[in-house]
Image (cartoon, rainbow, N blue to C red; front, side, top):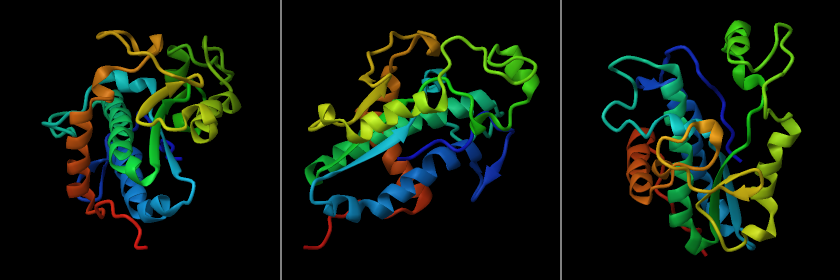
Length: 220
């Protein structure tokens, strides 16, 4: 499973000048999956790759002209782009891997207060209605961490998903399509996050950026 590492962080550059949320939440997972692919493809009963996206993907499509925010940084758009990238990554990994028995899924785990919010101030979380002044979760529809893990475990193990892949999941179900302009808290998956052409384009961008090896089948 590939799980998000950062959210809504101050503007940072890492590596060769990458925007940090895209680097940590997407490029790192991408390079790891490419490196592990021969082992995944050699698994006798197939393998599943589960990537945590988020309802935050609704915030923006992938910013092809300025993915690293050279024209001005917005921490929430950067997070949304990274979550769109997570979903597109799973879509194309599944397209490439299904012949080898490697299937990929992406998902929204739900609204959960964990260490992911570590770079947001308490005041910001209070103002958003997520927690009270003592940090107690009060937001409507929030899940516990255990509840949030349920869709991840379902994606990794459910026999109902056998023979399927490239799907965006939420609440232990395949997510419904979201209408354009639908707020992210209304659920569903937006078309830009599961578009096969965008997924293939992001794959090539990510290969060039990271230098990760193209997917190779195991040697018999």
